[in-house]
Image (cartoon, rainbow, N blue to C red; front, side):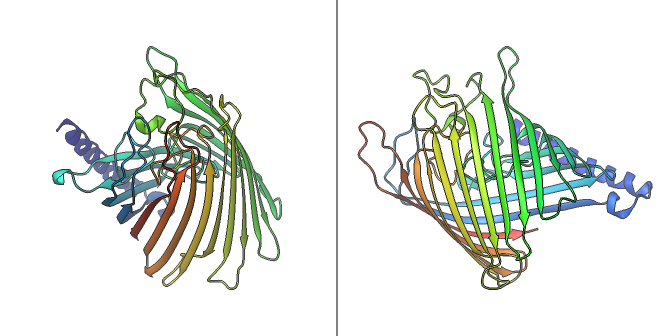
Length: 379
């Protein structure tokens, strides 16, 4: 009951604040481009079937199939305060204890849904310089191999993009991210940096290269739950990670015109190695091919992806949660997207995955199938 009252109070405060700021902006008669709030969001309805479940330690595997219905709502607002500063916030469904997901599984005797604030930030832009602080969208070029798409880091980040450089555009991004703050113990945090190049050719081919290094300091796991530690190797008392996490992440992407304007081709590769690992399971890679696009009605896009990730190659607190295996997996991914109506996409996603290395004494080496049928409406 206290949680519901807190959420209701937060929503009411935000609503009143939005109305007040909008009123002030109109009284001040600012430029329309600066005075208006911009709203965006989406709603997604999903059916999901999992053939059997690898739940991960300390939970045992479950051979029974699981069928569930999942919904998601995301509602964002941004305010351009002046030519350089913008503030933003986003409300989402999902548990505030799970940074990797905004999904809500229907059931639990029709309990009310949880809502959380997964973004609250300010941005500063001046020519090629970009600064942000708070809880903000991920500033790095990424794939699901290292960063789940729902993770919004907390802390500070800066980026500089060189301008007027012709067909080649260099970008440098740095960040200090807060992982866990403790009153009477040491804090956990990450220093990270990424250098990137974007290359546009006269033939229409676009190439993007990015190299990043993410250095985590995890002082303790007293505030972490099973959803945070997931499939990384822990000490016998489950009070610390066995490995340090100093990730070298290299991403390459190429965009090709394809056969015609409706079917461009995108190829993405990602390689990661944990230079701080204390075990041999310290690297992984992912490869994805996209064919088509989802820009307007009747557009169609296909994707095939393959990935392998070893147990301590990434910090699984922030890697993908598309399946219950956050690391130590081999995975095939097939997706089909169809724009059925304006701002409405029908999607089929199929994951076929299994453990890369079996735990001692385990003989179950079968692939697990997870099928998702999604209907996404952009607001």
